[in-house]
Length: 441
Image 1: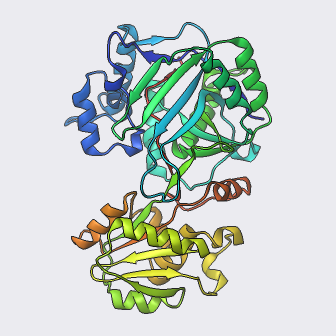
Image 2: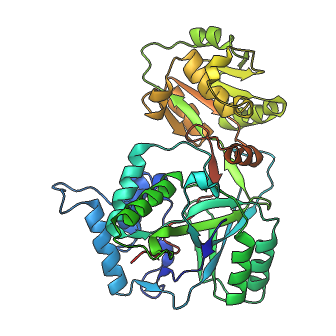
Image 3: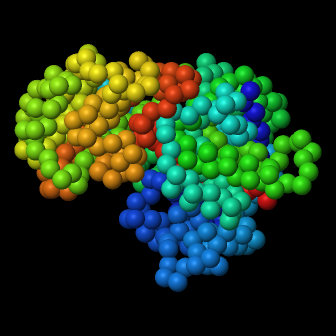
């Protein structure tokens, strides 16, 4: 069962620092330019903790992790961060304009959820389900930060099927006149609002409603697995066990009902670079073994590319391969040697992202799964315009554009105990880090 709990969050004191200048995008979405902007925004911006700068002379006694821990301790001691007086859950609303990468979706939109502590469970317990593979390097970095700070600064984005019951109860509380504790607009124009809800009856209702729910990690696979590793470390180090839940048994999560509107998934396009030899003509010849291939106007722009993909995707798999001087639409996959897909289920084999990885990247371009996971010849890009630009100015040999995966496909894959290739989903918008903070000590 899904065990959730209220908690006393640490939050920025708006009288000491404007929250707008302190919160950030998730650590893995912060570019070097964004990191610099955050540093300039405020000496108390959370980037100093979740993605600090490496400095000359860093070593075991002084590094990004020790500085993060020192900053967190100092900000609590000096009142930059203040702890809420009573255990609460936090209603979280995000109002946004749907990006053009998702045609046919009504805009503007709102996504609602709530922030609470969620019990950390191993995957084999069949309470929390993943849908993507993870990489070792990001987990090692997040584990070092968690060991140093002993706190969670961002939330894991969790999906559940609730039929709107929890949302309806929380909406009624907000409608009764509670004002948001936080309201900020991020650099992408998304308006984030947070309401603190401390009513024991409401919290009990929410906890009871969530007990029989299965949870799917939408965003935060690396941080979730990091928290699980840290929990196991602390349990192993404990001399005795009372059997009672301890702070490290839980972490902050934002729970979003996938039966409600407002869930938007963006595609993540692939860029290929560094291949010893690559030609559009050879790619065209090889791709015809796997798909029906049509030439498309080589001067195509991002809007037109998105529209073509959207229309072609109505009938099944549709991919756009963009080279320096040619563009191809790949559709209607052909029957190929089933060994190409290994042990992947039929439900996965029909997905665009799997067709791209197995048939195009591995089958046509001969880039191994290990190379893809190590990002040796493949990188990722959210914006179709940026992907086209990188090919046309020579930074990439080819770009592969695709439609986003659907939420029902994510749900079915996760509950079947399967995982997709990394970067298969990009839920939009992201949950801001620093709205609430959970300190283990």
